[in-house]
Length: 282
Image (cartoon, rainbow, N blue to C red):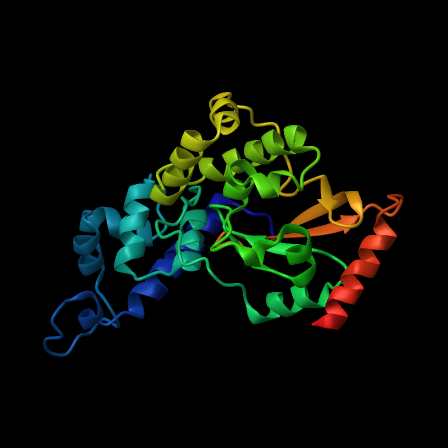
């Protein structure tokens, strides 16, 4: 593979912009389709005008010349060329800009059928999917047995952790787990600090949980987990867990959290039997 260079990136950016411009008809962007056009798709001057930039500057950009380009201008160009979130991210990377978070952080209410099947196949492994706001958007039977997600309307892991006494009783190491989870959530918040839903969630939790309020304003960013280390299970007692977080949809910020009881834990075998019997009943 040839080495990556700025020249190669500029050529790729040039080809990408030209290709996407040529795919759009004038009427798709609100321009009249008058007469026969020699140019396939949109003209450069049309893209420039719709994006609010000069025709000379846009021509240089599409020619791959070495010019500076801001994130705001790239966003305008992406809008004009009707790029979806994936192509928008590609445009930013070609222009050597960090892709900003998508403005529309919804809808996040579903996982794909394949992910749903994988979760259901994990009979002995509690698993749930969360989005950027930490709404629990999907879970398997094992996770429901541990956390009783189905008993809640639109469960949210942060709300359960800080504003749900029943859930808190399931976490014997709450004083350790809660601040670590909050520190992890802080990194998600940093990727979309102006999102109204995130702001509302934080405001609600500050009003109902002194612990949340204290830790949130403490600015602690030392965390790397999206699950509890220990869960108290009816009929078994406290079980220690390991968990792993997998990105299942980067564009919609969906993560899958999978739990596995530590094998040396006395309750691990009892938990497996409980989950197997729970699966057979269903």
